[in-house]
Figure 1 (cartoon, helix red, strand yellow):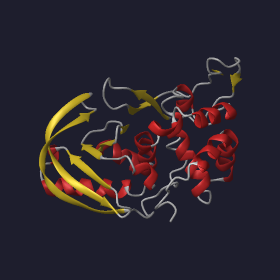
Figure 2: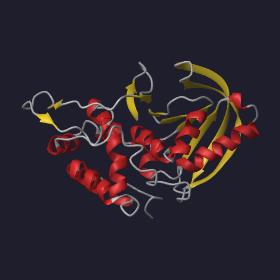
Figure 3: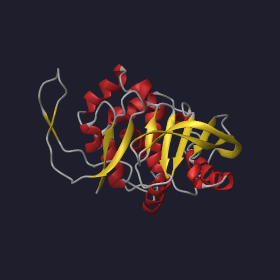
Length: 268
């Protein structure tokens, strides 16, 4: 089963690393400062694959166009070398009909501006399916070849197209980008505020093992996708999945409700 592990790059962007891990039964102790209690195992290993129909390729997108600007020197993180690289990237200005603009930087390994444009349009369209709230802080997108994990944070999304094909085959390309975009646009505003921390404490459970094992870094991204499923896609998911999410994280759901997120184009 696919799960997550967090990788932090010192002084740079923290990314989510997708790895193969075994499903295990592990007891969770309460956070320091609280009484020690045991918690039930989370219902999921990770949330990107709880249902492939939360967002589908046929759903509306806010993406309008990706116009070629130029080739220019850009520093990008490449998981194939697990380091920063500087390349003469193909640069595109991607526009969305909610007024947001993102620079898409495509590795020159794709060979031509036309080939790079195909990639920019493909992923720009998927990114446009994410709610405005998850794109508000998005400034750049890096696109490389390779079968490596995606990443999110520091106003960026990282895409490796070989891995994207695998996600698309499983029907979870959109859900994975939603997870990563939650890092980009939600973490900095919510992960340390009292309302979110109080919701974590009140729920006394985590939606996934990945969130439980990384409560300060992954709980928002893991929980937001599940939240969207019950609040905006309840007709697409099973009753049992709806009940599991609602019963596991009711206070997190209430917290997200209170934020009045702009959910266009998920909700007009």
